[in-house]
Image (tube, rainbow, N blue to C red):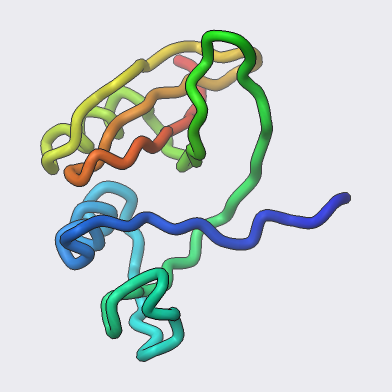
Length: 122
């Protein structure tokens, strides 16, 4: 195995509202680190940690967007996208079947960050 992905960040102009959004969407629990983050990354006291499993891949090609995107595992992609919209996000793609036995979708959070959800195919 190569060097692992060990962290992700979601930043916006209203970090408290973003934490509330993701707590409501994925049931994440955030833990304030005090002054653990540098002010180059976040305002003092606004950077809160969350524990979530992570895996990765690299792809794309001509005509594909340049971006950094992570996927959160959910039991039902349609339900997660609907909840994302209900909480103030915007559906961008999906649900779409992917290769194998899973389905994916993309949405933007209220700050415009693009995220993915992945779950079992129906």
